[in-house]
Every structure is written in C-alpha cells, then in structure tokens.
Image 1 (cartoon, rainbow, N blue to C red):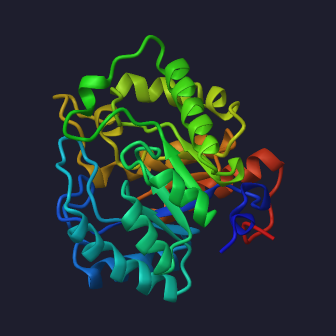
Image 2 (image 1 turned 90 degrees about the vertical axis):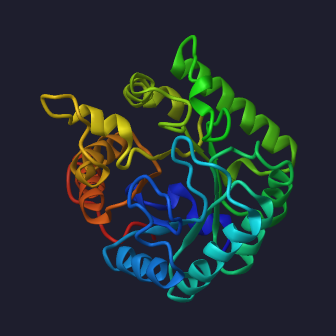
Length: 289
C-alpha cells in the first residue's frame, strides 16, 4: 500500500485505530487476546465495529514492563498480522524493532507504529525510508521499566514539541519522507497525569508542527484518576471507555488524524459527531474518497 492511500488529507474525519494487544501483560485487558486465534478474532470484531485500521502489538509498554525477546515478539505478532491483512484490514504494527516491523510489513502490515520514534533501534529509520510506509513517531524518553524517571520538563508542551521536531529532522535526514510521518505526543510515556492534560489542552501547538497527529488516551491511568471515587481509587481500565470517547471527540475537533482506542464504537461515534459539528452538518461516509 502506498503512502498516498493513507494520506490524512484524503479523509473527511479523524480515523479510529483499534488496538489488538497480543501480549499476556497488557494493562488494559490482562492478556485476553494473547493467543493468535484470540487476537485474530478480536481484530475481526474491531473491524466489524468500524475500525479504520488495527494496531497489532506483541510487546507491552505498560509502566514497568520488561522487554520481550525478539523471537517471542515475532511469534506473537506475525500470525495475527497475516490473518487480519488477509481479512482486508489496514494493519499498523506496534513495535520498536526493525526486524519485527520488516517481517510484519512482509506479512501485510501497512503502517509502522514505533513508540520510540526510531530511537530504540538504529535500523528503524533506514527501514522506514526503504519501505516508504506511514511511520508513527511517538515522543519517547526511554523504555517502560524506568521511563518515569525522565518525566521532568521545563514546559511539557514546549519540550515535547521540540523533541518531536528533532526526531522529524533526524528521520528526514535518514531518508524518510515527511509525507510518511505521523506524530504522537506519547501520553503516559514519561508523563505524569498533569503532563498529559497539558498536552491535550495545548494540542494545537503540537499540530502547528505541520504533521498529522495520532492521539492515544485510551484507558490510560490519568483517565482512571480523573474518574476516581470518593476514596481516590482510580476506576479500572475497562471503565474508562466513556472518558476515552470524550477525548476522541475533542481530539477530532482539534484536527487529529487518528485516535488509538481499545473500544471502537463509542470513539467512532465521537469522531463522526466532531466531524459533523465542525462541518456544520453530517459529512459523507465512508471516511475517504
């Protein structure tokens, strides 16, 4: 699939990316979709619910998560990518390893979603340049086992913007076309809850970089704290979907290219409402021409 097929300018609303975690230790679902058959079935369900694309990942990036061996990540990811691509899904592979990304692209994936923005594997920028596929560049300051030690900013929005711009410069110098790049502010990654809210409140400053934005708030801890009961206990991940949909609507109203979510129907409705609100009337479906 060519980059132009997924150009954000071709879409009339924010896209919805459904999450397919094929890990035993995901923060959001506790490994419910870990086995390949379960992962494939879940992906098909999200696709039937209207997901525009599916993000398949085999390595948990929850706070404190250890790295997964490459062979195990490949074992988890490739059967699911292959099966869902054959089912007609547009697949994003969520990985920090160039070897896994390359194998997934060969198996039918169309995107690479690298939470390290190409920093974790020095071979990733070259692969993105060679394959000319959309490449999601997330703001990242280190692996999950120690990332909160790096959650120190002078001004989080200014600092994240500057560091994302530095990644764009490095990637384009490595041969990646700016047309391939999609930016993700990395909510929850080396960020406190207050940092996350500041980034969302000033999302337009990130949009001013001039590249499409992917926003991933889904079921994250800062939403759990927002919805906490009187005793301060955060609500569990599965009870954060309504709040996620609210952030999807707001991100869409601010021009986000895509929202990454675990529960598709509510966020799909949210981005369609945002598109109609912004346009002053219901925009045509499907999302692109």
